[in-house]
Length: 321
Ligand SMILES: C[S@@+](CC[C@H](N)C(=O)[O-])C[C@H]1O[C@@H](n2cnc3c(N)ncnc32)[C@H](O)[C@@H]1O
Image 1 (spheres, rainbow, N blue to C red):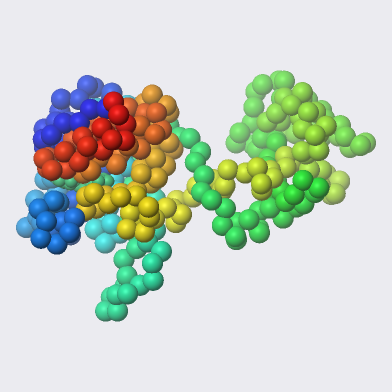
Image 2 (image 1 turned 120 degrees about the horizontal axis):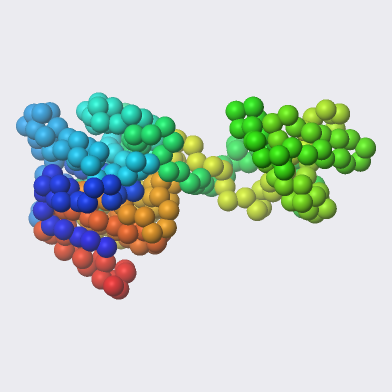
């Protein structure tokens, strides 16, 4: 874990070339506000930029330099509020080949604002320079709609959804071991693009009653995915199951502090154990804690000395290095 006090725009120039697997960038949002932990405290930062160009001058160098320090299959996440997303979106498109928005519904509370629409969504622009950046499937808890619509089948073990066991045309395999004929109760299948499983594994699943055989004569078999064994539903680009610090159980030590679970999802989705995450404007160091829990390395920059002290305090109490 590396923590450096200073201006991110200078410090990133000292990073080794192609040394970073993912960046979580959560800069000031250009709100025109001062953020303090509690009124009249000094702890916090000013998010006041007299012109949009001055705001661009703060964030653009971090994106511009990414071509030097980010690995080829690496990901860059730009965290911003929906209200302020236009400038970051434009800059992400300028520096990256692929930009996918993830919408984070950070608040579930009832809306007490009466004179405008309540603001509950942040956007994480997931940027990369290759079509397929490093990616691990991550899961969200099952919601009742998904559970009812996907786990429609039932047997003595419980409700189950259907998982594909044959490849589609775009996934066709050249592996000849996956082009076998499979027979069961007088019916036979030999999928045109191959099976996703070896014959031995398929036989085992059949013997355990974990294969669903549709009644329709020509329909293909499926793997049974039981609701009680499922990790949840594969994440979509709407993250509505993780809520802001104000609503959760984490101790709030810094204004604009993000929940550990949010950053954990970002880094588990885009990196593997042992990989290195960079947080150029780290605030209270949530990224460092998330990286530690998920067995990743982390480099953090922050120009506010009070925030750097919180990061060090957090590391000492949480991580005991
Ligand atoms: C939105 S906060 C980050 C919050 C953080 N993700 C957390 O969970 O605590 C943005 C941070 O950027 C820092 N910052 C602003 N300008 C900076 C710069 N030029 N270099 C480094 N840090 C900067 C601010 O002091 C502030 O702590």
